Image (cartoon, rainbow, N blue to C red; front, side):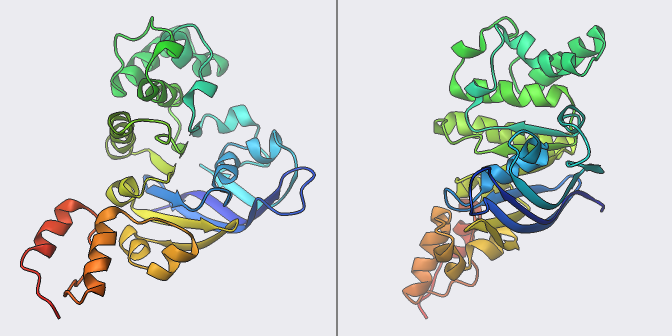
Amino acid sequence: MASIIQFSNVTYSYPRTDTPAIRDISFEVEKGEFVAMIGPTGAGKSTLCYCFNGAVPQLFSGEMSGTVDVAGCSTFEKEIPVLAQHVGLVVQNARTQLFNVSVLQEVGFGCENLGMPREVIRDRVRQALEFVGLTGFEDREPGALSGGQQQRVAIACVLAMDPDILVLDEPTSELDPIGSEQVMEVIARLNHELGKTIFLVTHDMEFVAKYARRVFVLSDHQLIKVGTPEEIFSDQALLEQARIRPPQICTVAMKLREMGYLITSIPLTMEEAVPLFTGLSHG
């Protein structure tokens, strides 16, 4: 399958700084893939997200080298409004993205900026709100919604523009468990039902284990490993190096292995763990 995202030797430093925020980053993501990026706070994950839509370096300026191509567009050559048709970015605090007086106006705002006909905008807003489970919220004020609902409005805003790629920077970090699950279920449906390419940055390793096809580990501003969730969460040395807490079920399995129990593989979910832990024998 063809790559829809290509980073080649990307290094970027913010203005008036000596240390790069990201250094020599190279990777590719296939169309329709669900990728998660993890790493400690300050590693450069948010900076990397802003590279997808051209905000880095077009809005932030600074020094940048390497190339970034998304959906066949160079983020150096194409303007941000053009890139927005291919990449939707959702940040961790949806409140910073919502400024209209109603959900209807909020979700239609991006489409209006792209000059779409009114009837097209109406259909896209309706479909986007239906998909994220907010039909009937059209006249509600975004600021009066719950955190989870606001995050789903933010997703609907980019979904209405029908981008190929959705980049989500810590979309559940400020939500309670119920709101987090609702948002992640919407993101998973975008991937499975609509074929959207998902690039998720998160500190919630349970979500990474459950949804991601591949995991990128960023540490000290560099990409230090790419692998499946199984490969990443069974590498204790890597987890310690990148200061990453694995899913709780992985921690339990590794502790049992240290105690001498015959754990043949590290489970990622409770569903995987039950048959593996049933009838455990001590080595």
